[in-house]
Length: 197
Image 1 (cartoon, one colour):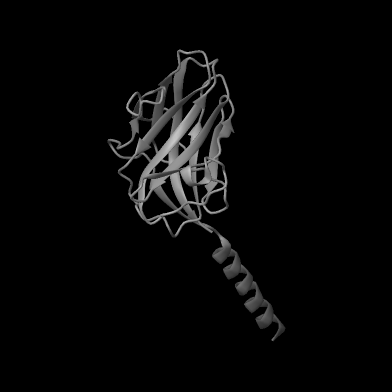
Image 2 (cartoon, rainbow, N blue to C red):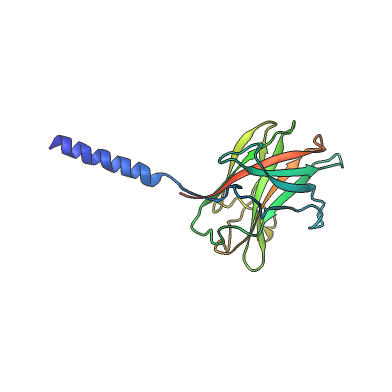
């Protein structure tokens, strides 16, 4: 009888541990033969320094490929380079609590990166705080969507907003902030996941 009770308790503990594990769905792994991601370049008129994107086998967090993001910043000051897609595999991300992605920074300087999700008929921009990626580092970046840590027009660009209209995702953009010391180079992006806790 005692063994049966202990076995039942052990099973409940195992099931609880399994139930507590976050569920992850990859929405972009960059494993296809072509990509829908583009570099902003001069298209948005905001001084963006991205110059191109391509699929690459030089590095991958998972699978065999990642997105190679090229930039050139000739102005000798901190600049941003932005890459985005409007052709996502998922448009309704309302079941998810967070987004994560993997970055490799082969430059000789620390770069920062942030993700921005554009949602709703008004194409509202929700951007995360920038995260440091050290020179030579490979890092997973995780962004919570509902902990008041995003900035948007409605928050006066303060990091106090939650994601709105998450059932109508229009664009995913990743911004890299390049230091003045790095005139040109590449960074790699891979394995964008939506996470349910």
